[in-house]
Image 1 (cartoon, rainbow, N blue to C red):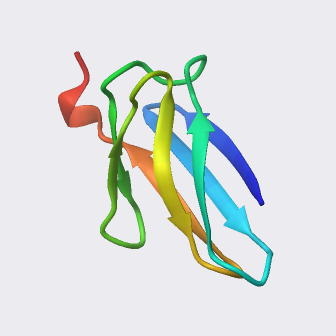
Image 2 (cartoon, one colour):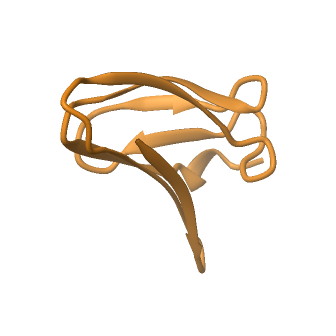
Length: 77
């Protein structure tokens, strides 16, 4: 399992990859990267998650798969 953030110009992404043979639900610490309450949306699948207590929580990553979450700039303060 690996997760990383990527910023380029106005785009902010969180990428999570699971090379294991089982689905995994994870929490990702993002306090130094994203602000409390910011919303991320799935790029490939319908998924929404907000930053709460410095984390994005309950991210289900299927076996041998990955997800990409994009910061929803429409709601930035």
